[in-house]
Image (cartoon, rainbow, N blue to C red; front, side, top):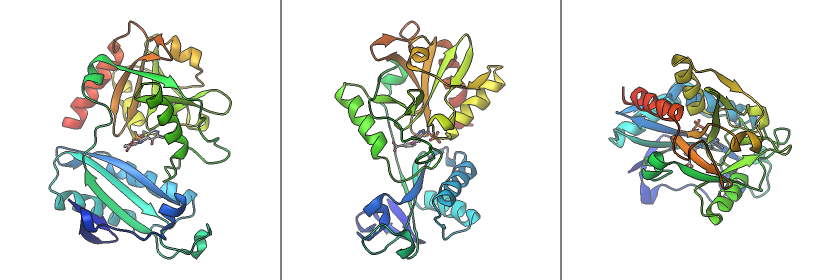
Length: 283
Ligand code: PXG
């Protein structure tokens, strides 16, 4: 494994950054998770665009032009000779003195890791996943815009812990008002009367690239999608439910807080979208 740090490649054991990097000290930085399918990086420019938007929002100047960032990602994939896998693209605030002031930091660091990922075991895509609502709420959009994919995931980690303690793999997170936001590392959709519904970003959802892909696929199947306010009641009474994310792809949900969704198996529309998604990435 060769890891890219600021233009140089390092073996895994030698890939190191400073303990004074504010990415480590304060979670000050942004990141992206991408997938490689058949040797090609899926939706590369969309991910790089989102990375630069996240960086802009936190006043972090990425020391590479977008085109050079895309080239660096493609080159790192090539160096690692990976035909399929996962890419973690990270930009940290860089090294600085103790104290949170980001203006004291030097140059931001760019890190690219090419590896594998499996968020949920295969069998769960066949039989579906049981999830629970976490009591940890999604940070309010007026505190931190949920579209910023920052290095600070503690809020989501707390919710993930709740899921694990409940014997589940994933948790749904609500916003401060009690509306459904998303899961800890995935967006959430329901199917009701053959239409898709997913929470808007101002309710606390990341503007997911897989979510956008699913909306696109749904459109091609004449399935309408509505970004709408959802409560737990809507989840419990949905015909189908699924999660979307770069790591998870499309993952069917069959039970939420002990309530069976639909007939308790991955629904027809969900399976149709999963098939189409597979076809798309395998092309
Ligand atoms: N919400 C959150 C909070 C996320 O972190 C998504 C939604 C889905 O977005 P995309 O653009 O990927 O469709 C994410 C993405 C991991 C991992 O290591 C997490 C994500 C993606 C890939 C890997 O747990 N989160």
